Length: 445
Image 1 (cartoon, rainbow, N blue to C red):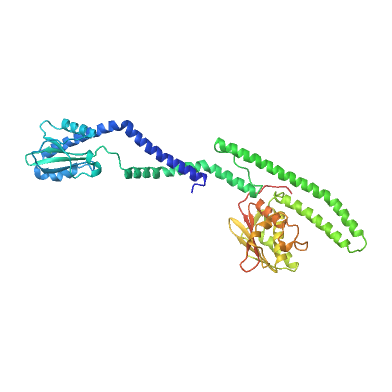
Image 2: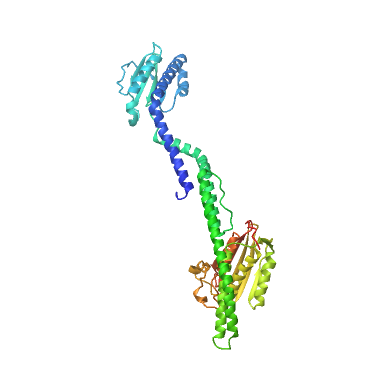
């Protein structure tokens, strides 16, 4: 429940505010409780004196009507009863009630006949803090003040309701504060995640609080080191590939100069395989970083050309769907990626469909075939460099094992991704997703 930083901050702040409310309430009652009781006692004395004067000033038949307006809820209330000659005061042990009784006697007129008695109908929980004050109005009627624990603390239910209302009131502000505190972290995590998929993504913004600025600078420094490492690796591979081209060319020429023999064609095939492997390795290293400037691609004509090429090679291949608008991307790199995907589909299936699904947010290209497909365990594994499924480990069909890796790197460099999915009947569905709002580097041709 509290696995995210935002949830933990919200819980800590909310619980902290609730604890502060409870502690501050009890602290206030401890340090100012005596003053509050004194004020309550004076107000109650004045209220009883006013009620006594009012009841005596109005006719007896109107007293019951006015009595309901004088009642003050649970802690004390008034009632009328026949006059009694009993004036002996009850013995009260609660110090607060003793003080209150003295204040009532002092506030009332000197001629007022006041007596106190213990109620028989008070709740058992507050019986020790309950008392009734009897004021004689005339020879026939008395005014009774029912005091039921007037200085009690609020009940647990009332405190919980108060705390709940306070927490509900401050929750929007806590959420807003948590959002402000974690927004920059979320942005940083999103930038790091995009960089993991696309090295061409922009750096982490170095803004916000000082601690986050330091973290952003550290992440950007690491990003620069990784980019330099990628560039150095690409340069090293390019140099190795360039240096290997010459001896491989000499080997091929010498093999072709040999007399016809059973080993001659095998040697030439081995040399060509090594040359292709060197080129594929260099293309894989370069695929992680776009080196060409973006171009406006007419998607429908672009894919029609590749489908026509597959048909000219004898494959059963068709194009369905249409792109709504052109797409801006690295034309040569995307062409290489789509050719790899279509060639794989044609190689392992007898029928291939290239389907276009276009929206204002993303361009989706699906390549579907009816081949043997792959197990669920291999749907992601086949994107690993130099990995080939067991059924294709031969030079006629297997290739170098870099085609899908190169295609995914190119698509991710455009901010998109490639996924494989098994079809319901048989075959494989390759899904290429390209966002339309991705900013690409200018590159260099």
